[in-house]
Image 1 (cartoon, rainbow, N blue to C red):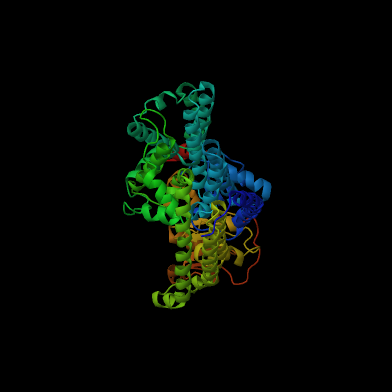
Image 2: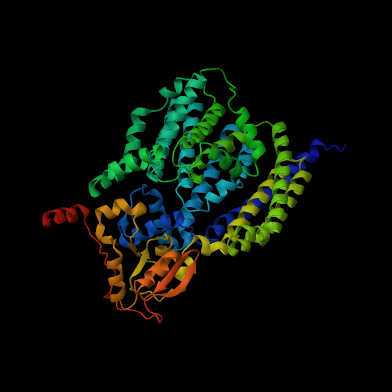
Length: 586
């Protein structure tokens, strides 16, 4: 058996440092470059890119509007961050994702700093390598939703709370850490609502019962922390309650209680939905994560003392159970689970890490073989199941990813004697695979984005009206740089349209009259409605297609129309006064 001397191992670790620095630099450059790798996905990315674009255009940072319509389902903190990004870098899909990319990066750096403080630099590097290459966290840090930003603030609150308990023998330091935790929780509320305080509260209850640790409740700094929390979080809610009638009821009752307890959003999934999501999202680090979950509940300190590993474990379990119990489920909801898992995974002993690393190499190899097999069979499968031909554009990327995974598996096995080098090989392989997938997604653009439709008429729309007939591609206003008029379509805009009904067209007859009376007009329709519109005698010329959506124009030859012609929507400065005047007239 080959034996390696201690001096040789020390020299190996010294040579790894430059490699680690180089890998980190390349990873950081790619991290931000990939934010613009593909077009915005409909609906989520279009929605969260368009709202701040309209804030920037109107100068109103208080009331979020989507397609010109009041949209108060979520708080504004990430919208404000996107407005700042637009001001710095201009309006683009890349700049729209910059706040999310920064939030994902800061979460990894936060975990690195926290783990380094508690368990040392080697554990900190392991945690950051895992966090920077795990499938779902990396994907979601390059996808414009609110969940990555929420994860940053919940992780900050978690880390600050744990440090407050660790520093309990120094009351001043403990108090300062708790104030940071309160501020982080408030920023989480301003990002996605009361879930940012509900999850920590339930976790604290479960942990204190399991550990029989009642002292954590006495170290919450409530007298200073709660007012500080309200000072940060409350002003926007107070301003909105004064500006928008029915805001508090809609936001807290409809968007929190009813969304969680009922199927109002039509997002119901089986109770076990998040278990496979969690498992797939852990790739390729599944063995280490499973080991951490299987052992993290075991207490390593006496009952009544703070056990950080057990607290992290409780956070993971409570989050999974909380979202699994809801009648509204989406894949990104589970994201706050991952950073505590990185911490647990990094806290294992070296022998366990070596076993996990060897098994992770097998995970890479198996995934590579499965992807290669799928890519080989993809044309036959697409033909048999009638899948869009666009899906075949991913085939070269699947072969590349399969090759990278297999090579990475071999490299990590060869480096197994040096744990750091093996972790670098696995992390680089995993991140390169996700980066390839993100870049290849551009080939599927017509299936998930309205960008091709907007590009087909770029520079030709001018001030002509644009309609969305019984459909609404949320990326289209962003790429057009202007709002569109909804026709017979309400969905999530129902609350705003009840306040401002003049911002949409309900009847087909009214739409047909406006269409015929316009010198030039555009509309996006579902291909199934195209023939019905023609049967109503409307002049329609197909300009572009994206998936099932068709962009049509009033005239075949496009010409810029006078700015005096505009859609029927008008900006109304004060909703309350408008509703009052309507009531007075009636």
